[in-house]
Length: 150
Image (tube, rainbow, N blue to C red; front, side):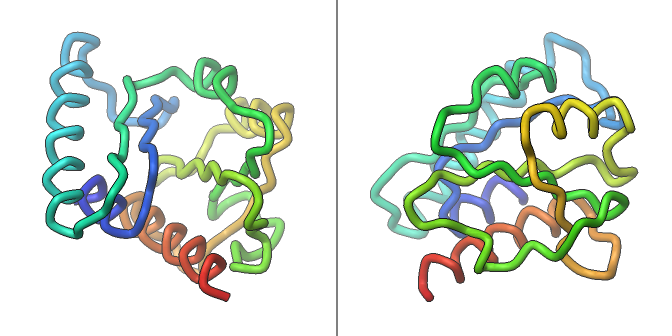
């Protein structure tokens, strides 16, 4: 569901990554999952009549994800346990790409938070409530969409 709704809400790329608190799959399962997620993304793309394909990447380790960050990208880590402010539309700069990382439902570990800090991610919360990962993704994409309208 998260992949389908993310495409409908305008995500250009979905980068699954493994956290310490993620529910792990066997390494051989990730290729099948990626293919399945890409099929779901493509079906959602045709349904919502988007012009550009949303690419679902391979599943990454966190360190590999950090290495792939492109210049001119705003970096946001959404974690309900590391509050530094609310993720609101005015944070989004229209001339930059946006990368939001959404952690597992137990939040990121201290080690993962340190990796994000070192990579210059800003830490934000979405609401005062603890959200499931898929709800957080939809909320974050809605905030980004509102920033593009205003």
